[in-house]
Image 1 (cartoon, rainbow, N blue to C red):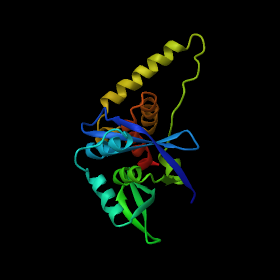
Image 2: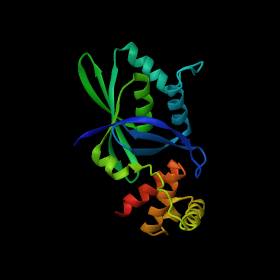
Image 3: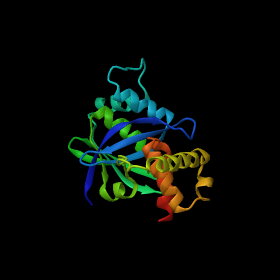
Amino acid sequence: MSLVRLNIKGISYSQTQNGAYALILSEVDGDRKLPIVIGAFEAQSIAIALEKEIKPPRPLTHDLFKNFADRFDIVVKQVIIHKLVDGVFYSSIICERDKIEEIIDARTSDAIALALRFHAPIFTYKNILDQAGIFLKVSPKMEDGKEEDVNQENELATSDIELVGNEANYQKLSLEELSRMLEQAVDSEDYELAARLRDEISKRN
């Protein structure tokens, strides 16, 4: 299976779940985005690594791992998001010491926080991106006389999103409704909600 390189596009705060964030990974040679729901601590650690000028007074957990690895000549070569099961991403950290390579299982948020600190590339497999990637769509120009109808339809979709806040409610919706809400969530850049809707759609397919 072919690997696809990813960059970090950013982190967005969850509009539907307190304390949760969506980490947005972007396909290097394409337009797809891969949103991954992460916790507040991991989001803070990744954000600090992205902002070069921010240096905490004491090392965070991922900084401690980096210091430990440096002391013992362990290098993180790359991170691979290798599996997606029921909306959960599984990752591997590829490490090297004394020219011996080791593969370590890790949560995706931890793996990415470490990849940033080691300046290591992040990859996923093409089939995972095909399954879970989201295209950012640019709205086409409206034809005369149709713009009002489209705006009304978007308002309806937004109302649906606000009403749906957990997985139990997702199960009551049809695939068509979920797909429509997914498009609206992407348009409004609510990637955390988009990730949850995408995962519910994947479970049914």
